[in-house]
Image 1 (cartoon, rainbow, N blue to C red):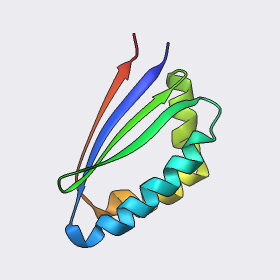
Image 2: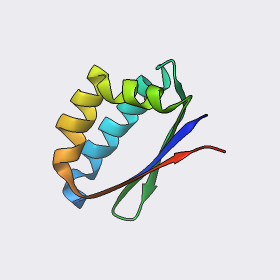
Image 3: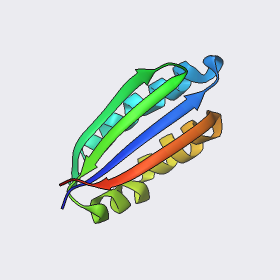
Length: 92
């Protein structure tokens, strides 16, 4: 069963360009992953909304273990966030 992730990231206006650039680079890396079906980055007031879909939860776990996740998300994006929320769902 497919597995979806919906995340909202809020950041200071001064950090928006850095976060956006990292998320767009992440989009390219993630779309090349075998289990990734969708990775969309949306601009919203004060931040970003991500919609991701993987073939299954194991595919998402592999995504989180990828070197580009560590570099772009854990080390670049997350330290700049003022707020983050994530929802996980099985796609029916």
